[in-house]
Picture 1 (cartoon, rainbow, N blue to C red):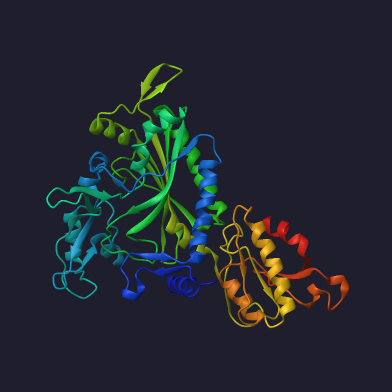
Picture 2 (spheres, rainbow, N blue to C red):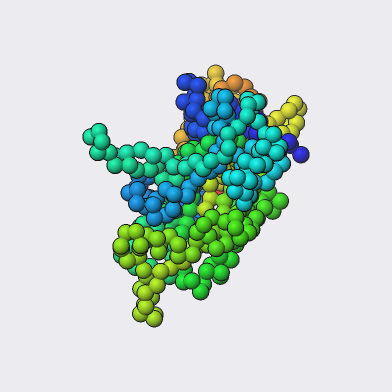
Length: 463
C-alpha cells in the first residue's frame, strides 16, 4: 500500500501545477491557495458532476448564485454576528494567535463541548505552551467573519461582511424562488459559491483555509416529513461519495450528539474522509428545522411562508441541508488517487483518478518531435479529438512533445491522464500498410499498449 503523506500531495500539486501557494512571490499569505490549470480542471469536473447529480439532474431543485456581500441584517438574523466564534489563545510574548481547541487536540484532549473556562483549565493543567515555547493567554471568543464596509465618505461607511456561509443566500431567495417558479414541496435550492472565514490558524494544505468554496443544498419539506427526507439525503450523499471512487472504508459517518450540534440543528451527520493527516470532515447533513426562515421573517418583516395548495394553509417549511466542501473534495480525490509503483522499472508516481474526474482525458504526441511527418499527423489527430471533446461532459485533450516518450508517459501518469496516444511510423504506414491510420494507446494504470484505429478514438475516449 502506498503511504500517502501531506508532504507528497503538496509536492505533487506544486510540481505539476495543481495548487500553488497564494501570493507566493511575496512570501505567501497563510490560508490562501491558488489553483493552477490542472487543479482548476479537476475542481471544475467535481463541480460539474455535483451539479448534474444534485441540481440539473433532478426535477425538484433550483439553482441560485447569490451575492457574496449581503445586508448585515442577514447575519444578525442568522446568529453569525453574535455567535460565529472560535476559541482563541494568544502567545503572551509573540502575540501570535492559535485555536485553543486545536492545541488541546494535539495533546490528545477532545475539546468537544468544553467551555472557554474548561479549555483554559486544561491548557494550564497540561502546561501547554505555544509552538514557540511561550505561555498562552486565557481562551476568548473570536468572531471569524471578515468585516468590511460600503460607501466612500469617511464616517458614513456601512459595515458589511464577507459571507461566512452560502446557506443564507438561499434562504433570503426563498420567496423569489416561490414567486418565480411556483415549486411544490418538497423542493430545494442549490448553490456552489465562495465563503470566507477568518481562521485563526489555517492548516493542512487546502483543508482549512480562509477562502473556501461550498457546494450546498437547502431542501424544504413539511415538518412531518423531515425524517424521511433526511434518510433520502443520507442515501444521496453515500451515492455521491461512491461516484467519486471512494470505498466504504474511506468514509466514516459521525452522528453528532445533543449539545454538540450547531444551534440551529436538530440532527446532524458529518461525513469524514480518511485524509493523510487523519479522518476529517468532507461534508455534512443537517436538519436545520425552520430556524432560518422564521428568523428572517422576524427580522425582515417579510412573509416567507409557503401556501399549501392541498390544505389551503400557510406553513413555514423545515430544511434539510446537505453540505460539501469543494476544496476538501479536491484534496480527498488527490489523496485517494495518489499511487506509487515500479511499473516499467524504477519508482513511478501516478494519480489513479477516475476517468470522469481526470483533468486530462488523453494526451497526444508524436513518437519523435523532429520528424515533420509524425508531428503533422499527430497535430491532425490532436485537433480532431480536441474539437470532439467539446461535446463531452468532461474531458480535455493535451498535446505533449516534451522529452522522450518514456518521460512523457511518466509526466502524464503523474497528472492522472488515463490514456496516452502515440503517433508513430506505423500510423503513416511506413512499417506495414495494414497498420496505417492506427495509433498506440497506452493505459495509465496497467501500462498496457494496444493499436487502435484513429476513427475509433473519439468513441473510446468519450465512453
